[in-house]
Image 1 (cartoon, helix red, strand yellow):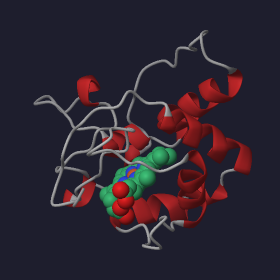
Image 2: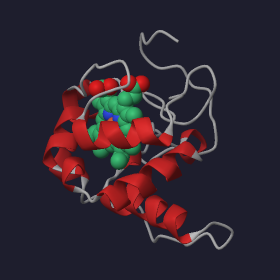
Image 3: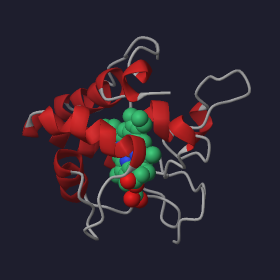
Image 4: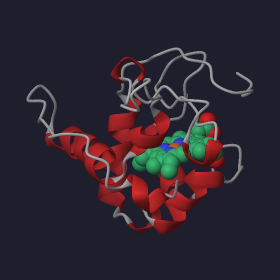
Length: 143
Ligand code: HEC
C-alpha cells in the first residue's frame, strides 16, 4: 500500500484537549489528521482498525511489510529522542545517529513532511514526545 492511499483513511473527528495548550493541540491535529503517523506506527486489530491501546507503539505489519518502530517515549522500547531531534528528522530524514529514514518513512519525509513549516514540525514533535509511553517491542530493533 502506498503512502498517498493512507492519507484518505478516516480517523474520525479531532477533539481538542482543553487541558493542553494551542501548540500541543495543533501538533496532535497535524499528526493525526494530516501527517497520519498513527496509520503506520499503530498496529491494527483483526478488523483492520487501529488498536488504540497501542497508539504509536509500533508494528511488525506496517505498509509494504515494513516493521514500523515504537515512537512513544517508552523507556526501553520507545523512541527516546528529544523534540528537537525528532523535528530535525521530520525535516531532513536524518536520525540522531546519522542514519537516514528508509522505506515508507523515507517516502513520507520526502513527499510530505519536509514541506511542513518549522512551526508545524515543532508542534508535531512536541505532541509525539508527550504520547503515553507504551512498552512494545517490534522487529529486530536493538534497544
Ligand atoms: C507511510 C508509513 C509511515 C508514516 C505515515 C509515518 N511513519 Fe515513521 N516510520 C515508518 C517506517 C516504516 C519506519 C522505519 C524506517 C526507518 O526508521 O527509517 C519509521 C520510522 C520512524 C522514526 C524513526 C524511529 C527510529 O527508532 O529510528 C520516527 C521518529 C518516525 N518514524 C516518526 C514518525 C512521525 C512523527 C510520523 C508522523 C509525522 C511518522 N513517523 C509517519 C513509517 C511511517
